[in-house]
Length: 63
Image (cartoon, rainbow, N blue to C red; front, side, top):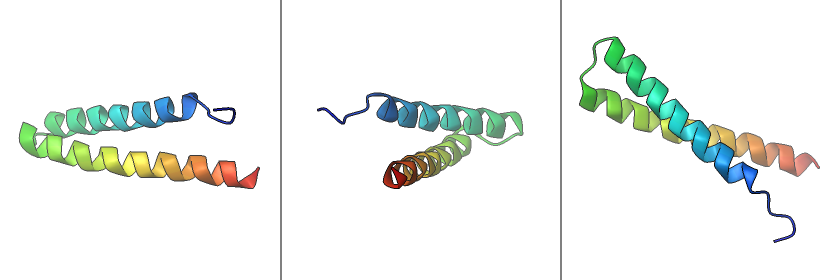
């Protein structure tokens, strides 16, 4: 537990959820159906989680 950073998982979860809500709301605002907007928001959430995770791991490997 010595090297565990509690902020990394929280940042990852926050980035994913904020991305999902932003994409879903924008899609509904531009006229998509709520179901389609929700699906697109979920895909964006997964992409944001992968990008955030890879950036965190790249920064950690350099140390």
